[in-house]
Length: 294
Image (tube, rainbow, N blue to C red):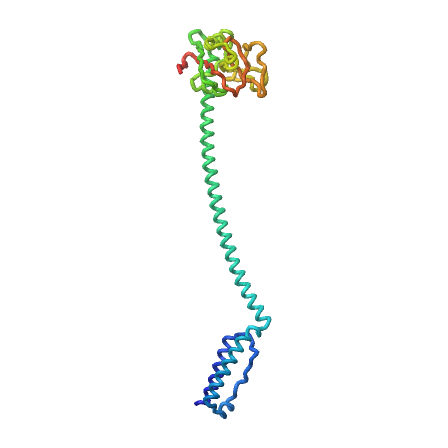
């Protein structure tokens, strides 16, 4: 029975070394005892203890030398496997970052599309309102022109003839806004067609003091040469005017931006004036059935 103890110890040592060292070779070798040697020798207790201690020291030397006794191919394979694991981890992180970026871009694109949609709806509503206002103004122009044409049409009787009256407003507006204000009141900006109508308009502003300030801040009438210099037209229709009443050396188109619209001065004469600059007020004309007392 005692003869089998060292044999079992050696076998156990071999198994442990094989598991721990793995594929690498150990520089420490131990010649195993054959069965004849085991059966012909019966160790004492001291020999048995010494054998176990020798086996332990051998195991430690084998473990310490295992790492340096691996072949280059085995070390290269281990390094390759490690690199593959690192590459897989880096790829995973890159994919996660790319996915996060794509989600952020998606959100940004959705926000931009929503913003553009809202802006388009706003622009469309604004355009619609502007078109309706323009159509309303055009309708008023056409109505007024038809009535004016009926007044002078051949064969028209005195019973059906309509007249117009003039009215002064003291709102300080540029020329275009003054035209729009007259339309909103149911008329149009006044255009004197002859000296009599010019005198009627002058009577409305005659109470204004004839000062230097009044000279530069008369009342808008519907005459301008916006399209072509010195070709004065009716601002309502765009047709040339036959009657003009500029004073002295006027019109002179004074200033860097010129003077393309006309104001009526308190002393029964006209002066060209910058269209975008507010005048002292404006004069509107109405058909009798459209008189407004605003």
